[in-house]
Image (tube, rainbow, N blue to C red; front, side, top):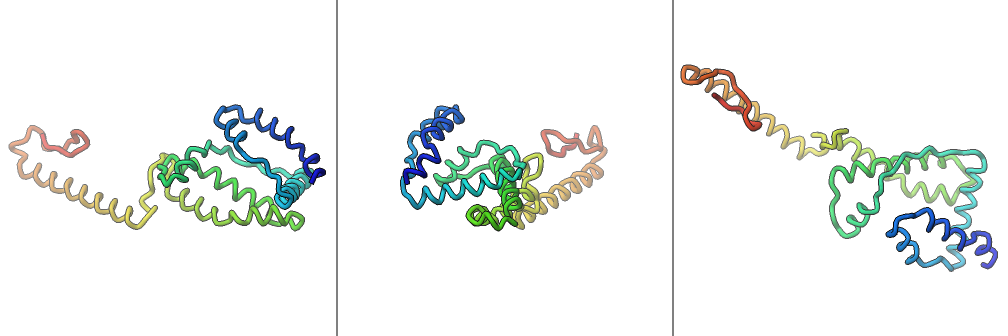
Length: 193
């Protein structure tokens, strides 16, 4: 136990983390965390770190994507809240990074702990793909995101077509009474003048 503590240099790691997290909130969170003192967990964490150290010492690289701060979203979800389209879109790089980790570690027989840990996240690929297909680049929802949304938008499109058709019919029928026979758009709605 003492050897593990010395090899991981907890005080040094804690100080580096405090310097890394320059936000006051993060510093407070770190100070609130209990240090792991259980031999089993310390030994397991040490093995994880050793496997990763070997991986990177072999000049392996994982080119991860920039991830937006997700703390507020996780906090909101933890409280039973909902996140909007932007929040879901912000999760995409995080979920894509998980796929990059899985790809980097999948054929490494000498990394069984890390591989087990990473493979626990393989279902996140499905979540990533669903969000990616549902949210368009302009942060709108694709009609094919759900059958209900598709049905609603089809009905709206049919009603808009019906209204335009009826407006053209009325414009033609009452063209003698109108200043213009063309349909114009006023406040986002078709109108006759």
